[in-house]
Image (cartoon, rainbow, N blue to C red; front, side, top):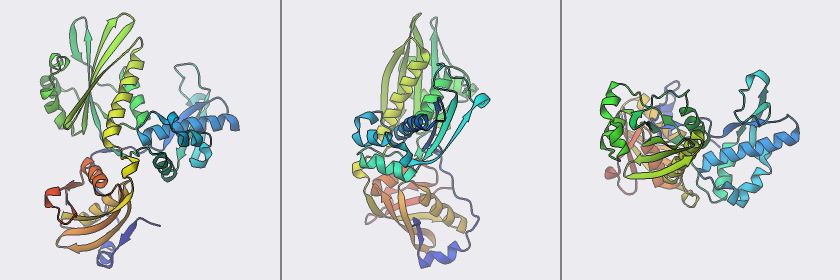
Length: 360
């Protein structure tokens, strides 16, 4: 059954809306949330089954935002039968496969896409949170201390040490944004200030990028064989700080990204105990044209939380919707707040109706 239903009031308008583009949210959409790629030794069924189990584990990590998957009996049982959740898979190998830095894993790569509805249901039934495709983007500032001098590291995503950062973030479904480090950034951000823990100017400099979170990394060598990274995750109304150490910079960076992802998931993922479907009445204001109407309707329909939506009424300047949403009003409001299509206006809410303004 389609989750999109139109009342008789809105039906005539919809006939005129074919071809009208939908609005785009500012928060990043993780397009590959339910797919991944793993190395495999052969294309034999037994190796394929093991590889699909690993692939499903990686997808469950991204969807739940939790690293303790092995502690959940229901998920462990699912990992033994990954084929039940697979939609598609394919191999590639030979010259198309990049060398494995560890020298292991096999000569082939197995790509797999899993059924989103089945995976979400599995995670919820296990009592874990579900984290949808719309996720907060995170701006990364990277500073290095060497021989007493502190500098901001040039942001080349294809150069070390950004490669392990990007890879770890991709495995957790965390969209990263790298600053331009142009003259404006360099004048605004003082490395000595951020090493001392003064973040006011860093926050101001980050505003131009419009991300929901800011991740600061300060890397230094403690010994010739030991490096340390100090991490700070800045979100609206909160700060989280931690330290990682290792004899391999790649490992301490991967570990730090995982901890950042844990904090982001704890804030933005939806707990299973609040994921019951609830009906929400929504009034969208600042709807002035047919294109506005289509943009609001399609945006709400696209949200992971929305199971079913109906157009209740269309009046001058606003449209009333009725939505069945996982997690009800609070879950829906949180997702909308991440985007740049609608702006929740709780001060205008009456009788439990969620009022939102359509943004330009």
